[in-house]
Amino acid sequence: MGSDGGPGSAARAEGRHRGHAAVNTAAATAMLYLIAAEPTLLAAAPEDVSRPALAHRARDGGHPCLGCGRPATAAIIVNSSAAGPRWLDLCSDCWHVVQQANETLH
Ligand SMILES: [Zn+2]
Image (tube, rainbow, N blue to C red):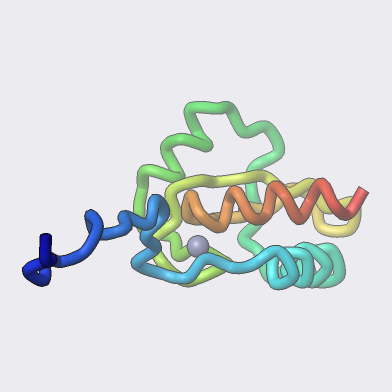
């Protein structure tokens, strides 16, 4: 039985095909340190932000992801002791990386 040159085994579907580069953990960690040092890089957020307000900002679409520059899909409040609450806008990929980086900081 000779193989007639099929395309080989079913094309390996890489589960996570990334069309863009999210930040890696090291970059996310550096970003968190930068934010801690320079919280004024982020836009000031209101003191009492409700969950709907977070979702609304994320859905707004007008905010670039701080990690990779794509439209942000998540909004996080960073409470800076020096500068008060600040918006941190992230796309979903970067959000996950930042969560991981944040955990490794503790
Ligand atoms: Zn991103």
